[in-house]
Amino acid sequence: MGGRGDGVSLPTPFPNQPPPFEGHNLFRADPALQEAVAREAPFAEAAVDAWGAWLGSGEAYALADAANRNPPQLRPFDRGGERIDRVEFHPAWHELMRRAMAQGEHASPWSHPQPGAHVARAAKYYLHAQVENGTQCPLTMTFAASPVLAREMAAPPLGELLARMHASDYDPRDLPFAAKSSALIGMGMTERQGGSDVRSNTTRAEPLGDGTWAITGHKWFFSAPQCDAHLVLAQTGRGLGCFLLPRLSPDGRRNAIRINRLKDKLGNRSNASSEVEFDRALAWAVGEPDRGISTILEMVGLTRLDCVIGSAGIMRAALCWAIHFARHRVAFGARLAGQPLMLAVLADLALESEASLMLALRLARGAGEAADARARALLRVIAPAAKFWVCKRALAVTGEAMEALGGNGYIEETPLARLYREAPVNSIWEGSGNVVCLDVVRALVREREAAETLQGELREARGTNRFYDEFVETLEHLLHLAPNDPAQARRIAATIALAVSASELIRHAPGFITDAFCASRLAPPFRTVAASAFAMDADAVPTAAQRRIVERALVSSGS
Image (cartoon, rainbow, N blue to C red; front, side, top):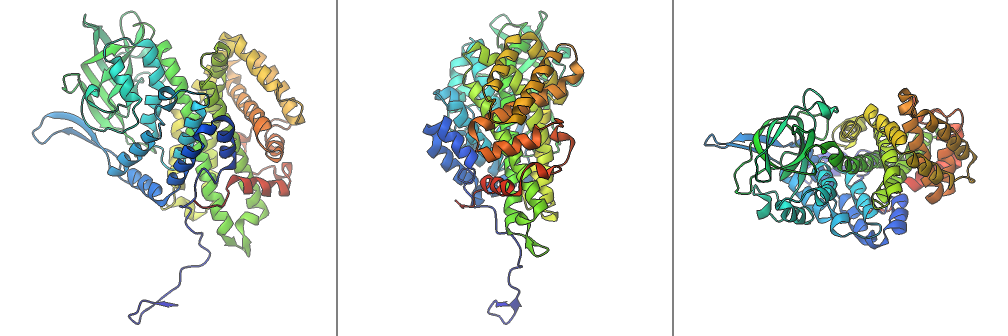
């Protein structure tokens, strides 16, 4: 017993409680990520290391908690009754945004292009996703919009806007973007009557004769309404066009965008999503007025990349908290991490996490190869397949990791509950499961060279694991079904994602990781792990290998 000095004794701290997880350098605790950055973006190692150190700090976790406990608020009117449609955020949101923009998560591959730039940026985004996810939404949309605007838009404000989109300082002021030091871009694609079927959109665009357009209509999901401008789709009379709407007109007046309400969401609560109406809102055309869907597809591809990276980061965070807890918690006379069934579960989660990271970095590497036509075609197959698989697995991984902590995982004092709520958004946003799987099939049908390139890449990794070799043969058979049987789209997408993940592990991961992944995921009868709980086939991975997998998954080095 301890004393307070006033004669009243207080109990000592309760035993058998794990120490705080805060204090780990998230980069140094992750050998797989360290190896990838050293291999593909060595110029960024020091910056990623510093970012991982701060994100693992108590300050970062406290800011993430505060931003999510104090969600944004809509102020439609000022005190004089004037319409202002302003979204106000907690200071924690602004500090997280300031730090992430300083890291270049929104623009670094465009502002500082070099080999490995996309992988370096993906590594930072992956670390960020382990701590707070709402702030990633405007960063992703700005990142994805930049190459589209640079290629498709020739209006006078472009140079001013692009320069500000590439700036690394965060400027949340309500000013026209020409008067700001930096700018962020949002999106508004879906409408009440259509959702993913954007061809059914009813919002209209009318040319004004001076290079600008007037937009009238609505958006059911208008992401991050606080952004300085948004890309929206609208009917032009010639077809569906893509347009850039500034939040404030160049003269400083509020554009005719009315925020009806903010969405009350399951997760992603630190970020604002909204429903809006347009009443002849000022806009500029982005690309040809009848080619809006084609114009936006590149942006969609890049946002899907971030869905995969973000989901991989969420899985990684859930895994780390589960391992940390199990290493320090004693139950039934032994540490949890050493008990056979818990060890099998943690090892299975670790395999899922590392494979997802490898797949995400494969996509990031592909984004840096955009000048190559075959690489672009291949990415149009792999990216939606990866989005389907990794984002779906995030739901299962976060739920299993939460359970590893028992009741401690279910309460809000740990981030597991928040991670669990965050997991579905990446699976739903930018194409839910059926949409992205059908995109995989369409890409295979339209671009046969993509299927050939995919098979060639996978064949290069053959010869080291018999389960992988057999799995690739099965995939090649499935690819021939794609044009004829859309009902197989989910199976095809999952098989592609698993094959590419295994291929990347064979190339880059230690043998015990690769062997365990292939034995537990690819061995006949090729049952998808999504159909079962984790560690259902523990015999596939020897206990000694499970220990090595868990040891690799979280290096206990502190910061």
